[in-house]
Length: 198
Image 1: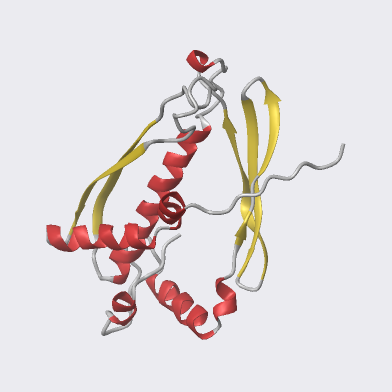
Image 2: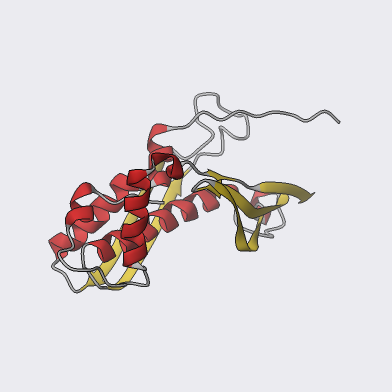
């Protein structure tokens, strides 16, 4: 989920054309609609999880709200999360922290595609590698001085397109600046946990 900078909104001199698989005319129309009616920008995304066994859970993402109404994905997306055998799981899916890395990679890559399209750049390839360093002493309760989550995350991109390297780097910089997932990781967000009565 990425926004486009004011410079990107005013960049096209002629009618934008779809590029990089992005429907650029709809992208600019959406920016215009939200600019005129800011209440359309309010979204809520949801996920529902069910424990399967051991460290294995199944998460479904089906509905969300936004743009003034309720919406359903064209098909529910179900993903499994687990731990590998070395972490006492059955390896039925990626670990939850790997999903976090995947979310960051997907968010930044989507932003790159949108921003490149808005700037008239045709992409040839975009590849990302995301690595996160974690010390399990925190999670295992062995050391209160060690945090439970990642202590560092690194993202590296390989990108090619019909623009000079400096312009491609600026596309990536703008994707980082407007990434919702990057923002959550860098700035945190309040999280509440409730327990429903049995």
